[in-house]
Length: 580
Image (cartoon, rainbow, N blue to C red; front, side, top):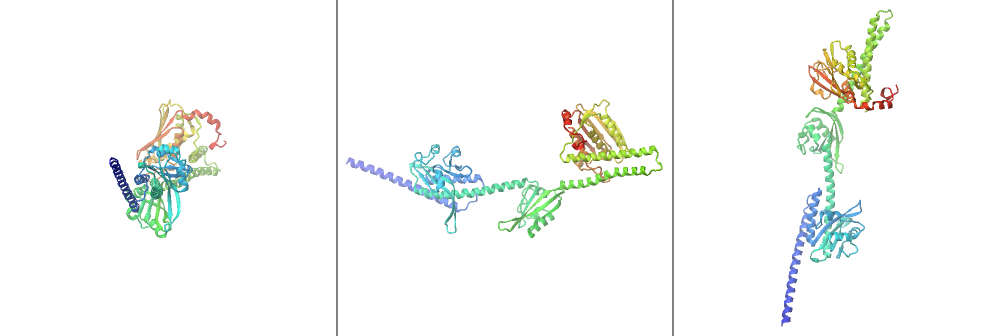
């Protein structure tokens, strides 16, 4: 009786344990059905495309956690094939693995169970990972694998009948360590294979969208950083894109123009005409337009059609390249050629006239004093031609990128200033010259000819910009290691908007009263380069109607003086490096 009672009690316990296990299995199956339905509903809801790496990572993390719950696996990881290295590489995020474990988990596609599943395209269950000869033992130990289910990550393309016509394996999907000491089953293989197809599809689509999105963002950043204005208008006449340069050109704040009709955003009829002509005539074009907002600028405008994949016109892109400075330089060059021609013709005409006068005087009408005066004028005009030609040669050197070679000697500034001022008096009968130079001003190490050229250009400017005469003052000072030479006039002065452009090539200042322009536009440009070649600097102060002061500061001993002897040994004599 006692044995029967004991046996009956054990049977009750067994039946109770079996019932408990049945209930637990039923609960797990119900949970699995709910999760499968959740996954199915999620797939059917056509979520928005994944366009960033962060979105993909979040989606995969959500996916892996549910896979772990469905299959009762402690760990899950996706491995993708890297064509460059020939390896299957673990991807982040991974369920149950640390970041460091993921970073080192990689297997050659010819090794281990990972490689076998990838190559053969069929699932494998490994019940004893440590003793299975197909596993890579280092990975088994690193990840503490007991049992493993591995299925291929494959992308399938099906025809209209649902038949698979193309299959591409991009990696493998691992789940490790079935909970409760259980083994992975054939049912688990079926479920994980289906989930792997979904994961492969998500990863493939996300990669494509991310690549396109990254390219789009890069293109947008490039467009926004362009100096040229870019305007994209759709076939419906609405603005699709305006980069920052285009918004600046047309005074459009922020992204206010996007999505609006072109006429509301760009208030320029010529631009409207170009865009409409391109859209309606399906013909690309170009034009040169002057746009006055926010300031007057000249633009080279070009239109190009945008077409869809089927060849239909989807819009037009218009670019605006600012050519204001190019046109300004072209205009100044044209004026420069005209001015130089006049500057050359004037002394040549004078020389020709006096030579002809002397040749025609066969009867000795002009005495020796008169003839000498004629010769002096001819000599002065020749000097004028030499200075102009020297300016042009130096301009050519600068424009071609060649340096202004210096022949350094000891320059006596008082004597040089006296000589340059005397040469200017012949052309400035209405001007009074004042020279203020200390008697003990020491010589400087410089190029004699180029210092004279600097002073000549500054004095010539002072005379030209003092058309009514007045005093021209040359004031030299000793500044210790440097000397300064200031040339002042009492002329028309320089408008403030011209000060910053004075030392640029071809720039000339006009008189506000007569609109007359003075000089060739290269004198001050050369002054700046000649002074800087000596490691000096030139500055200007001016007031309209009261005159201007140009100040040149030159070092007494420029740095190049140390190499002067060696340099002169290497360089041949003569202009522009040609034999003299």
